[in-house]
Image: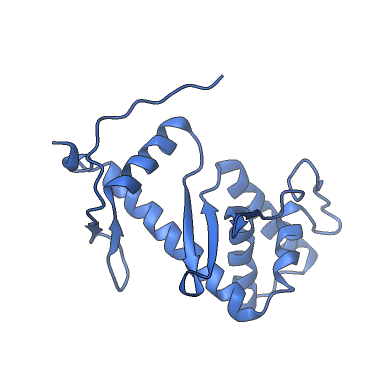
Length: 180
């Protein structure tokens, strides 16, 4: 059943709002359209999705937030890695963890769906081999040049920072200031 979600009227402008409460070197700019889209996804319990331009706009990656269950799947994969000895205690394993997160959040590259056959239903968890759909998606990245993976991981990190800023702003009384 499809249900239309009504939100307060929002001025359809692209006036950026800066979130200065974030921790980091710069501010995060959020438009009124992004706030409205985020709020609709929040109300509908659907992932928030954005198209992110990479390499000067030559590549467009569609990325999204993930569910609590997907976050638990990532943690489960990390636990399997630790139990099997795959997880190293060095910085290179951090790249693996970031890649796990990207693998779940990456929807498409230039409109081509990413890893649609690598889902929990199609790739059963195998604790003995420390393998799940999370690891299967990660394996796809191992074929990429490092600079490409780093660009995508960095973009996903910036996206997650924006989602945190949107979440903070949504709880602020000024979130819908533009509709006044």
